[in-house]
Length: 185
Image (cartoon, rainbow, N blue to C red):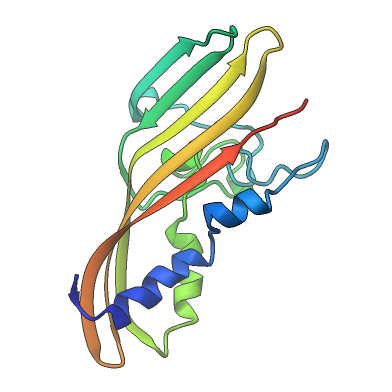
């Protein structure tokens, strides 16, 4: 980082408005009841669980059978800069490859929050590079049900800007971990 934390920390705090800590999430997990709006499972406001149709977006994939007969499927996507997540008006597709399988924090989320701070933060520029985003699913072939989904997204945020005349530039990695477990059909 060059310059002052007075610039970078407010920019990073914007990302925190969309997140919670693992500690808090474990104490207060979010539960979805049968028939309720599955707004984030695992893709935000999507009509299905995965909308990725381009196999070229996959960096690696692995499927292993577990001792209990279930399958563990691990998929890692290729890097993508400034991906956008699905929105209801997108229909059955996502505007980005990462957004077709994950729920990334995107510029369309951050920009409105950043606009609220336009009197404090000036000339804010940023990019988000998602890399090594990994989905791990546990699948029961007997019931044809997914038992759990574990998403880990790595987002390198590179930013610059001015706060009260102080200019700064730097980067930070935001790690987003979504866990869906105890799935009951």
